[in-house]
Image 1 (cartoon, rainbow, N blue to C red):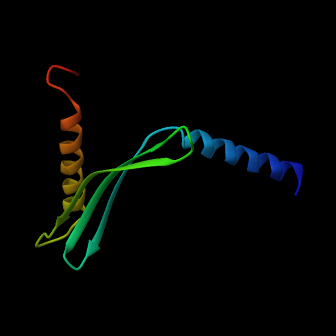
Image 2 (cartoon, rainbow, N blue to C red):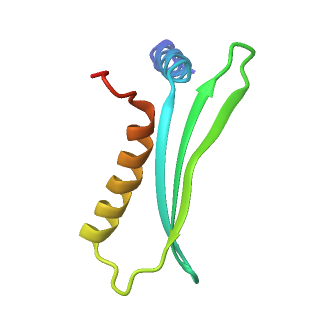
Length: 92
């Protein structure tokens, strides 16, 4: 492997190492036979290198019609519900 390729690989490893130290919030929506599933998860990398995944919200939605706008609206409402629980009254 050339030294330039080795430097690029080292840069990628540093980037992902840095990336893993920050909390993540993931929203996934996918279809099933029962409707659309929504899953909102947080992930934190612990000091021992283990991942701490936390399921924040999981729901199934069976709309009469599925459009991109309706999926985005549904996801926004689920995320807003979660965030509203984090904010205490009187705080910004």
